[in-house]
Image (cartoon, rainbow, N blue to C red; front, side, top):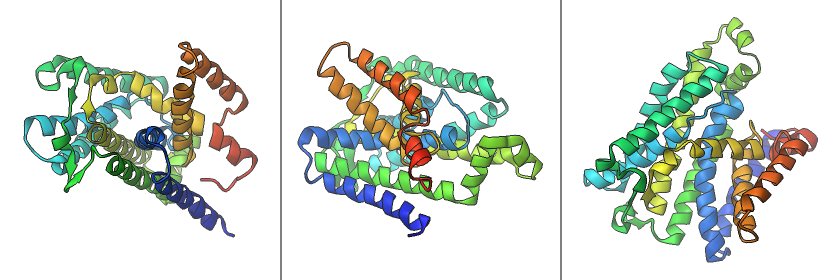
Length: 314
């Protein structure tokens, strides 16, 4: 069997499994998996920039919040339905990521991290400052009547799961196609040795700009979908905490692997969920587990699997 068939078989098999699970999972895990698929889509967006391009951003919550507030403010203040509001969230994500990319990509290394972090903090404070429109730290609930998309009620658990699955499938297959395309391979080359790529005649700034816009758009799509499916938009989603989460998920699952963001999100979500049922000091358990994984699996779960067993994993 060729590597291409193995890769397609593995990723399509995962999608078939996730689709089938909605018919057998109990209600609690059914809801959890829908949430995990949306958050994993966010991590996939982060992985495009960090895992494949090598740019460590600490401001991705800005893109997630741009999508979420682009959708929710449109619903709250314009009277538009969910479809144009969803489009507004995507446009907000594209505009914010392109604007930030033009400024932040003039820096490198630690300076890039600080610039992205500062812009994300500015976005967070902007949400708090315009509390008359955004309801500040309190946030607002998106009513069930506003969560109808083309006649489909997304407050219904079955419809919500299917919508989360569609988003995740699009993001996963887009990520897979991207890394196997010449554009994606150039991003990996930039991550490994940008000077050599420049010497070969590639426009590395344009490639990194493209990577940042793709990454921001996927993250904004996840933010808009999260608000639409779970009916809430709040300033906490724009805080630095939500910039650190996708970094942890990608590191745990395997940076620069297509399946790593999903595995990392799934692992982290259930690690905290299960340990919080055992003790109130659940963050201690989560912290120790994360340290052990970092020490014994430095390339992440899927990264180690690729290094040790399946070298054909993308």
